[in-house]
Image (cartoon, rainbow, N blue to C red; front, side, top):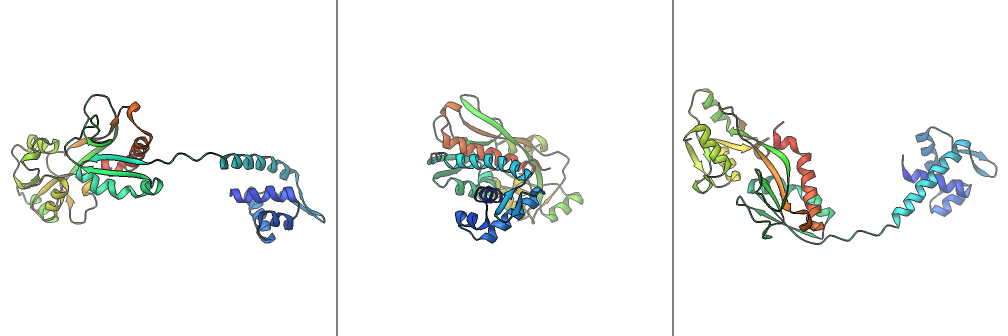
Length: 288
């Protein structure tokens, strides 16, 4: 039902004629007639009887007017609400480079249009920045967060897959020993590097890179097999998923803020938006 049709109906019930209603609403009488016909068609009832002196409500029209009066009162009350205080200020978000650059930043345009006075700062970091020391306001972290005075919500499971070029897939089918794209020495303690080392012993690394966006480029170039999050590599036309004897890693994605009493309204509205965004796109993260 179109509320504008209801508004025209209530006005015609009050004024009794098309011309008087049209003058009150500052439209032409044909618009009033069209709106009434549309409402009657939607409700499948006759609201008015056409009389020599004007329009008279039917019995069903009287009942409809009671409901319309309630709707009109509610609309008037809504129009008198005080506007919310505009959210302003800076909110700092930290996330891994791959997550920030390929998923998060491209999807923040809608939020920016809804809250143009809020300033967002995205810090693409693998190293955890301290929320307690106010280095960041919101952290999106792979894996369970640190303990302490923090508010943490698990928002998705991250499925990893093995990706390579079609040529590498064919080589594996023909019995070739897999060579991997992995992290450099500084990233040897990252969960992905540790998992790969445990599962494949001393894996042969054709190329080392300190971030996953670099690793996906290396995989496209044919260096070898990269174990990448599904959200990062799914749909890449240069890569295919390859099957290896070991099932790939699954990690958890957590959104972390300071404790509830330390979170300002601007941080809360950003974190709620991020939670909803990520949960809405769970199939992309979980590979289902």
